[in-house]
Length: 153
Length: 153
DNA sequence: GTTGAATAAAAATTCAAA
DNA sequence: TTTGAATTTTTATTCAAC
Image (cartoon, rainbow over all chains, first blue to last red; front, side, top):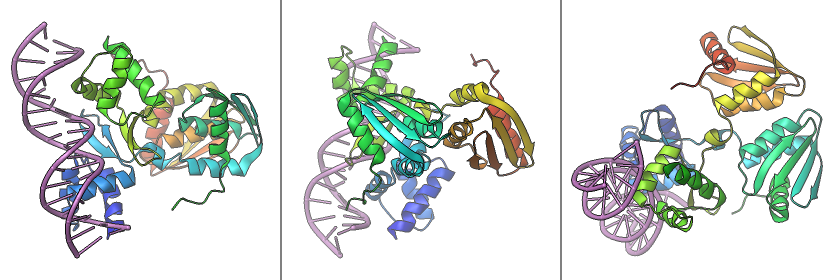
C-alpha cells in the first residue's frame, strides 16, 4: 500500500499545488488513502520532496530538480561510459574523457554542488576540478569514481 | 545590512550543514549578525532556500540546484556563445552549435525541466529537442533564443 | 520596508502498537 | 516495517514598533 501511496504523492505534488502536509492528507483521502500527517511527514522525507516558494509567494511541495536530472548515480554511469584517466595534483583533479564529452560531464559535476569543489573548467576531453584543498580533491575523486558500490542496507 | 546577511546565509548554507533556522541564527551571530528566527524564516523564503534530506538522513538547508547552476539566463548566454543555427519541424527542434558543445548545451536544456519538452538528444554539434507538440516546440525555441531581453524593472 | 516577540501553524519525531 | 496519537520541534505569520 505504501508504494502506491508514495507514487500517488509524487503525482499529486507535481499536478496540483500542495501547500501543507495536511492538504496532502486530504488529497490522499480523496484518492482512497487514509493516513495521518505523521505518515506524510515520513513519506515526504523518503521521497525527498522539498518545499519551495511558488510564483504566488506561497510555499508548496515539489519534486527537486536534482532528483529528476543529475543524481550522483547518473553522473557516475555517464562518467564510467566516457572515462579515460584521472590524476590529482594537490587540490586539483584532472579527468580525461572521450573527446567531446568533457563539457557535459563537467557541467554535471558542477550541477551537483559538491562541497569543497570550488569550480570546474572543461575543454573538449579534459575536465579540471579546482578543490578547496587536497583532502577535498581526494574525496571528490572517490565520490565520482566509486561506481562499483552496492547500495547500503 | 540585510543584503550582507542574505549573502552570508547563502555562504553558510553552502559551506556547512545547517539543520534548523535556530542553528542558522547562531551561525549568523558568530558572523556578527544579530537576528531572530522570525527574520531568518523570511530570509529563507526570500532566498528560496530549500530543506533537503542529506546523506545522513537529516534535514539541512540548501540552495536549490536550479537557482545555483542552470538558470535560463546562463543557458541563454552560453547558447548565444556557441549558437550556429536553429530549425523546427513540427514538434521537433534542431539546434546547431559549434562543434563539441552540443552535449553541454543539451544537458543544460535538459536540466531546466521545461514543460512540454519530452527529451533531448545531443551529438557533437547538434541538439535534437523532442517536444510534446508543435506549440510546445515553438514556445521552447522562443524561450531559449530570447537573449536580447532587458531585465524587467 | 525591516524587525522581534509572541503566537499560530506546520512538520518531525517519539513512543507504543500492530 | 509501518503506522497513528501525542508531543516536541521547527517554521511561518501576526502584530506592533521602528
